[in-house]
Image (cartoon, rainbow, N blue to C red; front, top):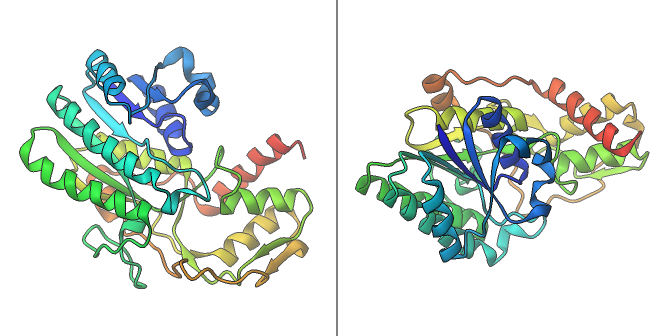
Length: 305
């Protein structure tokens, strides 16, 4: 199958691309330039890379006319760590998404999978299913929700099947170093004190390879509408920090409670992933302990410790 992947050079996109290439698909991947291929450098001989800024309408449409994909998994979105939540660039990503979908439908693409976020939901202390109410609290989440709502209505008007995958928390190799897991791992590997909040926040973390397989399972199914991809296994930030410290052998460097909670940080985020499981047979490969050990070893090899 000819599959278009947008955002193939990103953390999530690179793992989705890797899995589809391993499955033997004809994968066409949009990238922003040579600097966007670091995570997929070893795949380049088996991949059709398409330099393309999706916000450039003429460039985007010309590339799509040439590829004419049967399926598209759309991961491209502005996501610079520490900046993306309230960045005005979210408007550009939203507009590019809508125009991409319109063009794909006109070209006869059979299936589209867009990538959303658990932060589209209201976080009121309940397990989040696909029917849970929405209440975004950032521009990023609001723009993702806007895309989901528009695609829901557009799906009534086109034969193209449309699914919207809402991701929860991810971790694993190639993650941006500023995020929680890499920050904790690299800080402890360097022998530095890890200063965190008290760590009572409950989270839903899924290894990035399992995130990728969940996205691909949804893409290769007949599911439409919203689909959660998460672990459905609650874990506190404290437990995560303690597990990482135990693997590295430096529990003495934990400073839980050294940082205050952020007012915008929800205390409970947990997925109901039963729709994905029951309709595709998907299940994670990694439990948290195995995933953390693998991720720590990956960072050790990068830091040469």
